[in-house]
Image (cartoon, rainbow, N blue to C red):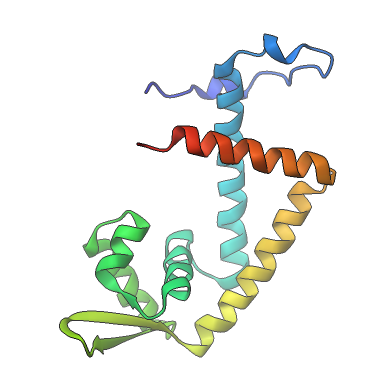
Amino acid sequence: MERFSNAMSMRAPIAESQDIEQIPAREVVALLFDTSRVLCVQSDRLLGESIGLSEARARLLVTVSETEPARMGKLAADLGVSARSVTGMVDALERQGLLVRQSDPQDRRATLLRLTEDSRARMSQLNAAQHELAENLLAVLDDGARTHLYETLTALRSNAAPE
């Protein structure tokens, strides 16, 4: 699929009175991509400010917290990165005292990862910061608009997902 140009995101917003059918699909998708980019930048800043980690390392900790104890091999698949990348991030997080490695009692070849108390505290800080960011971003929407946005994004994700 061809990439949407950044020039699309530079266009002026479409006036409220303009008929929605006149908005080309390409402009809608470009706006969605640009919005996603802006949200990612804010998320990166939030991660750094709230728990002092890069987005990649914070995502790894979040994934471990959701599947604890986490297998390193599965982490790579879940994060969509190479096993070598996960090993490097785990090494760094272990040195920082945020993860511990344990042998898997059911498979001696596998390594399990667990959060430390410090990383659990950081996850709590991250969750609070994410909640605040989300509420601030969506404050411009009433409950109906928020629900409609959720349903619309869910439909778009389903349509875009590979079969």
